Image (tube, rainbow, N blue to C red):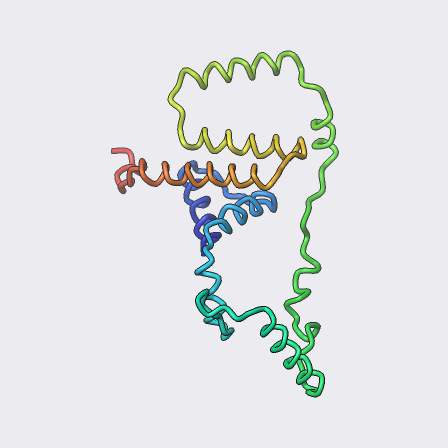
Length: 193
């Protein structure tokens, strides 16, 4: 649910910017990481309860020795039962074996990634930095900066759990700012009068 909400939020932001939405595997992984942190322990427990698993409350914890005895008794009964379910009987175990998880770079992409930056391009980037200081920064500017940070950590191969958590917290903070400061558009905003 949280992931779908994030995808819808992304689609709406792209509609406002009047650009097509394209979510690649890496962006999807960042979105999954961000939304997984929103899932609470209580939600997981409720999912197991709804699925028919018996979930004990923390007050009714079964000692480990008893759990081992229950497991051994259950395992002994399953060995006698010839109709026990095998893990390989389920198709969902390997449903995504043929899923493409990476893309191929074109020759142009490879060449541009290894070419040094020209001096003229450096001057242009300095001019762009000066322009950013002169104008009011937006949420989209902050999101672009956060995406640059993600790319830097990925390229330098220093992406740790703490960094991912911090980036996700910044992303959630930007969502909160966007929600609290946004003004709902009206139908008149889409037509020139």
